[in-house]
View 1 (cartoon, helix red, strand yellow):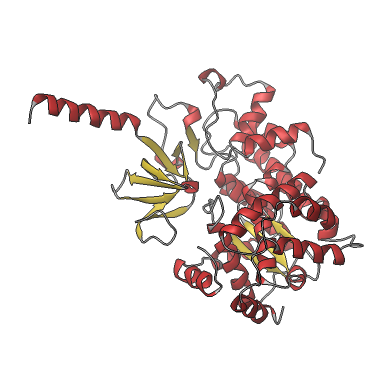
View 2: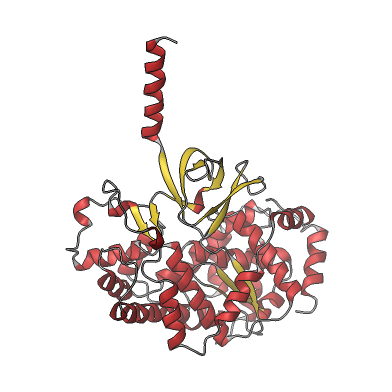
Length: 285
Length: 155
């Protein structure tokens, strides 16, 4: 996605979450000008709305990839993800965090708005330890909390939504409003699905997620230098990859260079019990 | 008790009421706990749009009193928002002193109704799988504590 100044402004608004922004009473009127419509609409993306957007993006991801049927491995990924989420800045989101494995050899991972996190069997096989898998999941949880999915929606979608809703408290939509909202919804889902699966997020989003993920890794007592090791493995594997992660993410070597400076220390060897359970859950993956 | 003491208590009470911050639960469901930690014992269940009164904060946790049941306990601050959330079933906002900037209309914009219309237009998408993932991943506190402890991790 081309990163424009307008996108940056939108992200700034969205990064405030749903916290009240200081507007005068005069701003909250029916006489919105064009700029204010975008402002209000993007501000009004509540967690509830993110959740519904996320469900539909997840349905699109599952239209392209099959779910991997391995309850034990899925529960293990879910446990790591839940622990990271609890140790993050935003443990509570509208519908909670959900983790699933996609039955694909592609080395890839996705996170939708609203907390659906997907990892492929390919990326699980790339990881050599639980800590490396935690680094991948922490990166994806970071995309959720930093609202990068919503930030990938084109600005004019918010204008369309604002135009449909106005400033009035619509509770039940008329047919015309519902048709218009569904069109904006469909366009937003398409923008996010394209960013996730086809074009990738902007480089700045990826670097931001790498940096943000370190907090929850450290608080969970995972070795944050696992991020370096898994990025290094990616760099080796994805040099000539025109599909999947290699096509949607900045070069791992560039990310390594950016994040390398931020890694505080190596915590030493990973405890044996963690090594053993990783091997056990991943043996059939 | 002297008139002065009663007056002072009265003043102090009204001052604390004036300073009270009302917050709303912005997640589908969460739990009121007896201490500021996910390991705390559950005191009450809270649902989307429930109102609470903030009493104190500690790190990322808020000590709150529920308006409905008057239970007191701790909620992670990420589950709360400093706005009044109006559920459509609760009718119109009657308090004219609350401005629109302090109110969130639940279900406004992209909602279940819009999702249903989107599903109809995109019949090939399988939302049963999405529902399955949502149902499958509820990790209990007990399980998570044991997972962290066994793996020498922090919770």
